[in-house]
Amino acid sequence: MAEENVVGVIGGSGLYDIEGLTGVEQVELATPFGSPSDAYVCGTLGGVRMVFLPRHGRGHRIAPSEINFRANVWGMKRLGVTRIVSVSAVGSMRENVAPGDFVIVDQFFDRTRHRADTFFGDGVVAHVMFADPVCGEVRSILLDAGRALDLSIHDGGTYMNMEGPQFSTRAESRIYRSWGVDVIGMTNLQEAKLAREAEICYATIAMATDWDCWHESHDDVTVEAILAVMARNIGNAKRLILETVPRLPRARGCACGSALAHAIMTAPDRIPAEARMRLGLLIDKYLPRG
Image (cartoon, rainbow, N blue to C red):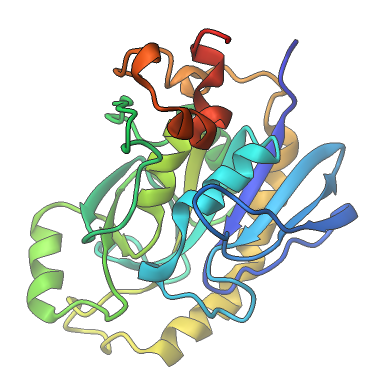
Protein backbone atom coordinates (compact mmCIF):
# COMPACT_ATOMS: atom_id res chain seq x y z
CA MET A 1 0.00 0.00 0.00
CA ALA A 2 1.36 3.44 -0.94
CA GLU A 3 2.38 5.59 2.01
CA GLU A 4 0.50 8.81 2.74
CA ASN A 5 2.25 12.13 2.20
CA VAL A 6 2.46 13.57 5.72
CA VAL A 7 4.56 16.72 6.06
CA GLY A 8 6.28 17.57 9.31
CA VAL A 9 7.47 21.09 10.07
CA ILE A 10 10.05 21.75 12.78
CA GLY A 11 10.02 25.42 13.69
CA GLY A 12 13.04 27.22 15.03
CA SER A 13 13.49 30.60 16.65
CA GLY A 14 10.46 32.75 15.90
CA LEU A 15 8.34 30.04 14.26
CA TYR A 16 6.00 28.54 16.81
CA ASP A 17 2.87 27.76 14.79
CA ILE A 18 1.46 27.35 11.28
CA GLU A 19 -1.65 29.27 10.28
CA GLY A 20 -4.28 27.72 8.05
CA LEU A 21 -4.39 24.23 9.57
CA THR A 22 -7.84 22.71 9.91
CA GLY A 23 -8.93 19.91 12.20
CA VAL A 24 -6.17 20.90 14.61
CA GLU A 25 -5.30 18.47 17.39
CA GLN A 26 -2.47 18.61 19.90
CA VAL A 27 -0.79 15.27 20.49
CA GLU A 28 1.51 14.57 23.42
CA LEU A 29 3.76 11.54 22.93
CA ALA A 30 5.97 9.47 25.17
CA THR A 31 8.94 8.04 23.27
CA PRO A 32 11.64 5.46 24.02
CA PHE A 33 14.07 8.39 24.02
CA GLY A 34 12.28 10.69 26.45
CA SER A 35 10.03 13.68 25.94
CA PRO A 36 9.84 15.74 22.74
CA SER A 37 10.22 19.50 22.89
CA ASP A 38 6.45 20.06 23.11
CA ALA A 39 3.10 18.67 22.02
CA TYR A 40 2.81 18.03 18.27
CA VAL A 41 0.22 20.15 16.48
CA CYS A 42 -1.52 17.98 13.88
CA GLY A 43 -3.93 19.17 11.22
CA THR A 44 -4.66 19.38 7.52
CA LEU A 45 -3.60 22.02 5.01
CA GLY A 46 -5.07 21.87 1.53
CA GLY A 47 -5.81 18.17 1.89
CA VAL A 48 -2.30 17.35 3.16
CA ARG A 49 -1.81 16.08 6.68
CA MET A 50 0.72 18.14 8.60
CA VAL A 51 2.52 17.82 11.93
CA PHE A 52 4.17 20.85 13.53
CA LEU A 53 6.67 20.95 16.40
CA PRO A 54 8.55 23.94 17.87
CA ARG A 55 12.03 22.56 18.52
CA HIS A 56 12.73 24.97 21.40
CA GLY A 57 9.26 24.48 22.88
CA ARG A 58 6.59 27.13 23.10
CA GLY A 59 8.03 30.17 24.81
CA HIS A 60 11.53 29.22 23.60
CA ARG A 61 12.55 27.47 26.82
CA ILE A 62 14.91 24.74 25.50
CA ALA A 63 18.51 25.63 24.62
CA PRO A 64 20.09 24.10 21.47
CA SER A 65 22.24 21.65 23.44
CA GLU A 66 19.24 20.57 25.53
CA ILE A 67 16.93 19.67 22.62
CA ASN A 68 15.91 16.02 22.62
CA PHE A 69 16.41 15.53 18.89
CA ARG A 70 15.82 11.78 19.04
CA ALA A 71 12.46 12.14 20.75
CA ASN A 72 11.42 14.91 18.34
CA VAL A 73 12.17 12.88 15.20
CA TRP A 74 10.87 9.59 16.64
CA GLY A 75 7.59 11.35 17.38
CA MET A 76 7.39 12.59 13.80
CA LYS A 77 7.90 9.02 12.59
CA ARG A 78 5.28 7.70 15.01
CA LEU A 79 2.76 10.21 13.64
CA GLY A 80 3.34 8.99 10.08
CA VAL A 81 5.49 11.88 8.84
CA THR A 82 7.30 11.09 5.59
CA ARG A 83 8.88 14.50 4.94
CA ILE A 84 10.27 17.12 7.32
CA VAL A 85 10.80 20.76 6.43
CA SER A 86 12.92 22.44 9.08
CA VAL A 87 13.12 26.20 9.59
CA SER A 88 16.25 27.55 11.24
CA ALA A 89 17.61 31.02 12.00
CA VAL A 90 21.28 31.19 10.97
CA GLY A 91 24.18 33.58 10.67
CA SER A 92 25.52 34.32 7.19
CA MET A 93 29.16 33.59 6.41
CA ARG A 94 28.98 35.00 2.87
CA GLU A 95 28.79 38.54 1.47
CA ASN A 96 26.09 37.52 -0.98
CA VAL A 97 23.82 36.06 1.70
CA ALA A 98 22.28 39.09 3.36
CA PRO A 99 20.20 39.13 6.53
CA GLY A 100 16.67 38.25 5.48
CA ASP A 101 17.79 35.89 2.69
CA PHE A 102 16.88 32.21 2.64
CA VAL A 103 19.38 29.43 1.93
CA ILE A 104 18.13 25.97 0.96
CA VAL A 105 21.23 24.17 2.18
CA ASP A 106 22.55 20.92 0.75
CA GLN A 107 25.42 20.12 3.13
CA PHE A 108 26.29 20.19 6.84
CA PHE A 109 29.51 20.46 8.85
CA ASP A 110 29.56 19.33 12.48
CA ARG A 111 31.15 21.35 15.28
CA THR A 112 28.93 20.09 18.10
CA ARG A 113 30.09 18.11 21.12
CA HIS A 114 28.48 15.12 22.82
CA ARG A 115 24.98 15.43 21.35
CA ALA A 116 22.94 12.29 20.83
CA ASP A 117 22.52 12.07 17.06
CA THR A 118 21.69 8.43 16.35
CA PHE A 119 18.91 6.05 17.33
CA PHE A 120 21.33 3.14 17.22
CA GLY A 121 23.82 1.65 19.67
CA ASP A 122 23.12 -0.38 22.82
CA GLY A 123 22.90 -3.64 20.89
CA VAL A 124 22.14 -2.55 17.33
CA VAL A 125 24.67 -1.13 14.86
CA ALA A 126 23.57 0.69 11.71
CA HIS A 127 25.42 2.93 9.26
CA VAL A 128 23.22 5.00 6.94
CA MET A 129 24.60 6.77 3.90
CA PHE A 130 24.92 10.49 4.56
CA ALA A 131 27.06 11.91 1.77
CA ASP A 132 24.02 13.89 0.61
CA PRO A 133 22.30 14.73 3.91
CA VAL A 134 19.36 16.67 2.46
CA CYS A 135 16.54 15.18 0.39
CA GLY A 136 17.12 16.45 -3.14
CA GLU A 137 13.45 16.15 -4.06
CA VAL A 138 12.16 18.29 -1.19
CA ARG A 139 15.02 20.76 -1.59
CA SER A 140 14.20 21.27 -5.27
CA ILE A 141 10.53 21.89 -4.52
CA LEU A 142 11.42 24.41 -1.80
CA LEU A 143 13.57 26.31 -4.30
CA ASP A 144 10.80 26.35 -6.91
CA ALA A 145 8.29 27.55 -4.33
CA GLY A 146 10.64 30.29 -3.11
CA ARG A 147 11.22 31.53 -6.64
CA ALA A 148 7.49 31.54 -7.31
CA LEU A 149 7.12 33.82 -4.28
CA ASP A 150 10.00 36.00 -5.50
CA LEU A 151 11.94 35.49 -2.28
CA SER A 152 15.66 36.16 -2.04
CA ILE A 153 16.62 32.49 -2.00
CA HIS A 154 19.95 30.73 -2.52
CA ASP A 155 20.38 27.30 -4.09
CA GLY A 156 22.64 25.19 -1.89
CA GLY A 157 25.18 25.90 0.79
CA THR A 158 26.92 24.35 3.77
CA TYR A 159 25.37 24.74 7.22
CA MET A 160 27.98 24.81 10.00
CA ASN A 161 26.38 23.35 13.12
CA MET A 162 28.09 24.87 16.16
CA GLU A 163 27.40 23.91 19.77
CA GLY A 164 26.35 27.25 21.24
CA PRO A 165 24.57 28.69 23.08
CA GLN A 166 27.18 31.45 22.78
CA PHE A 167 27.76 33.00 19.36
CA SER A 168 31.15 32.64 17.64
CA THR A 169 34.35 34.40 18.59
CA ARG A 170 35.90 36.51 15.81
CA ALA A 171 38.66 33.91 15.39
CA GLU A 172 36.14 31.08 15.01
CA SER A 173 34.03 33.06 12.56
CA ARG A 174 37.04 33.84 10.34
CA ILE A 175 38.24 30.23 10.39
CA TYR A 176 34.78 28.90 9.53
CA ARG A 177 34.65 31.26 6.55
CA SER A 178 38.02 29.96 5.37
CA TRP A 179 36.58 26.43 5.45
CA GLY A 180 33.96 27.42 2.90
CA VAL A 181 30.81 27.22 5.01
CA ASP A 182 27.86 29.42 4.02
CA VAL A 183 25.68 29.72 7.12
CA ILE A 184 26.06 28.89 10.80
CA GLY A 185 23.45 27.63 13.23
CA MET A 186 23.01 25.44 16.30
CA THR A 187 20.35 22.80 15.60
CA ASN A 188 19.81 21.20 12.21
CA LEU A 189 22.50 18.58 11.69
CA GLN A 190 21.22 16.25 14.41
CA GLU A 191 17.73 16.46 12.92
CA ALA A 192 19.08 15.59 9.47
CA LYS A 193 21.00 12.56 10.75
CA LEU A 194 18.07 11.20 12.72
CA ALA A 195 15.59 11.84 9.91
CA ARG A 196 17.78 9.79 7.58
CA GLU A 197 17.87 6.91 10.09
CA ALA A 198 14.09 7.19 10.42
CA GLU A 199 13.76 7.11 6.60
CA ILE A 200 12.11 10.54 6.58
CA CYS A 201 12.97 13.05 3.85
CA TYR A 202 14.55 16.15 5.37
CA ALA A 203 15.31 19.65 4.11
CA THR A 204 16.27 22.91 5.80
CA ILE A 205 15.11 26.46 5.21
CA ALA A 206 18.02 28.45 6.65
CA MET A 207 16.93 32.02 7.33
CA ALA A 208 19.88 34.43 7.60
CA THR A 209 19.44 36.90 10.45
CA ASP A 210 22.94 38.42 10.66
CA TRP A 211 26.51 38.32 9.34
CA ASP A 212 27.94 36.67 12.45
CA CYS A 213 30.93 38.70 13.71
CA TRP A 214 33.32 38.32 10.74
CA HIS A 215 31.94 41.27 8.75
CA GLU A 216 34.03 44.26 9.80
CA SER A 217 31.88 46.82 7.98
CA HIS A 218 28.74 45.80 9.87
CA ASP A 219 27.84 45.90 13.54
CA ASP A 220 28.56 42.81 15.59
CA VAL A 221 25.69 40.37 15.94
CA THR A 222 23.28 41.14 18.77
CA VAL A 223 20.18 39.36 19.93
CA GLU A 224 18.18 42.53 19.33
CA ALA A 225 19.32 42.74 15.70
CA ILE A 226 18.57 39.06 15.10
CA LEU A 227 15.07 39.39 16.54
CA ALA A 228 14.37 42.42 14.36
CA VAL A 229 15.31 40.57 11.16
CA MET A 230 13.44 37.49 12.31
CA ALA A 231 10.26 39.45 12.91
CA ARG A 232 10.40 40.79 9.34
CA ASN A 233 11.08 37.43 7.76
CA ILE A 234 9.17 34.81 9.70
CA GLY A 235 6.14 35.67 7.59
CA ASN A 236 8.12 34.80 4.47
CA ALA A 237 9.12 31.48 6.01
CA LYS A 238 5.46 30.65 6.62
CA ARG A 239 4.57 31.71 3.06
CA LEU A 240 7.30 29.42 1.73
CA ILE A 241 5.95 26.46 3.69
CA LEU A 242 2.40 27.12 2.54
CA GLU A 243 3.58 27.34 -1.08
CA THR A 244 5.70 24.18 -0.79
CA VAL A 245 3.26 21.74 0.82
CA PRO A 246 0.81 21.39 -2.11
CA ARG A 247 3.72 21.00 -4.54
CA LEU A 248 5.03 17.86 -2.82
CA PRO A 249 3.98 14.74 -4.75
CA ARG A 250 2.16 12.01 -2.87
CA ALA A 251 4.72 9.38 -3.82
CA ARG A 252 8.36 9.93 -2.95
CA GLY A 253 10.83 9.72 -5.81
CA CYS A 254 13.95 9.64 -3.64
CA ALA A 255 15.86 6.96 -1.72
CA CYS A 256 15.20 8.41 1.74
CA GLY A 257 12.39 5.94 2.41
CA SER A 258 14.75 2.95 2.22
CA ALA A 259 17.83 4.40 3.94
CA LEU A 260 18.01 1.48 6.40
CA ALA A 261 17.60 -1.26 3.79
CA HIS A 262 21.29 -2.20 3.84
CA ALA A 263 22.44 -0.21 6.86
CA ILE A 264 21.71 -2.56 9.77
CA MET A 265 24.89 -4.50 10.50
CA THR A 266 23.79 -6.48 13.55
CA ALA A 267 22.60 -10.03 12.91
CA PRO A 268 18.84 -10.23 13.64
CA ASP A 269 19.29 -13.07 16.12
CA ARG A 270 21.80 -10.98 18.11
CA ILE A 271 19.56 -7.95 18.58
CA PRO A 272 18.49 -7.76 22.25
CA ALA A 273 14.76 -7.84 22.92
CA GLU A 274 14.93 -4.45 24.63
CA ALA A 275 16.68 -2.90 21.62
CA ARG A 276 14.14 -4.38 19.25
CA MET A 277 11.32 -2.87 21.29
CA ARG A 278 13.06 0.51 21.40
CA LEU A 279 13.80 0.55 17.67
CA GLY A 280 10.86 -1.43 16.35
CA LEU A 281 9.24 1.59 14.73
CA LEU A 282 12.36 1.97 12.57
CA ILE A 283 13.67 -1.54 11.98
CA ASP A 284 10.85 -4.08 12.25
CA LYS A 285 10.14 -4.02 8.51
CA TYR A 286 13.70 -5.25 7.88
CA LEU A 287 13.73 -8.03 10.48
CA PRO A 288 12.16 -11.50 10.40
CA ARG A 289 8.92 -11.90 12.32
CA GLY A 290 8.74 -13.97 15.41
